[in-house]
Image (cartoon, rainbow, N blue to C red; front, side):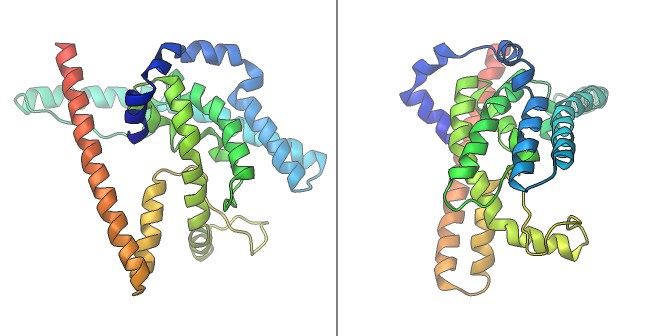
Length: 268
């Protein structure tokens, strides 16, 4: 939202160059599709790992199928949830006497929007490049290459303006990579304790998630965790970070409420 407001103030003229996401997806074609991105990434990772041609082929095909199915499953989710959502809405209208009932759903409800996948297709190579050159990053994206932790939020905040989604996404992706690197020791230790550490990996290998939602919350968790150990420096940092986070959240909530009021007025 902060970056979107900066666009509103400094670069509003960029919006006139925005383009249709569905047309972009069709122009990209197969070689820029999610399936193709999975193939490229599988080959790249396989070569880095020194795998045999058979292993590289298997990894590439698996990655391609997983990325391709991701959007399909989201579409199925929408179709499955729609009757339930409509039923709850009808019940609320009849029983709550005009009061509004908000239904919270996870991001797959938006998976059918073309803007999400158009932005993901463009951000995928950007993210891979950033992962390679970014100082302090130790993660190489695989399943997270489609940036599902950021594109749905960008869709909501930018109102589907594709140029904004791509630029803001490219700026924010390093935060996801850094936060994923930061929590990798904790994730790895937890996975080992619950027996979920992937078989075949070296015991010293760290695992994490490149685009899991909430990078700022991960940084906050790191600061609060160290502050709980009594380290004065981290106590100060944690307090300042929590205050800043709370103020930004309050501001964000107010901005979204204002936007909702405008939408409601336009709908009348």
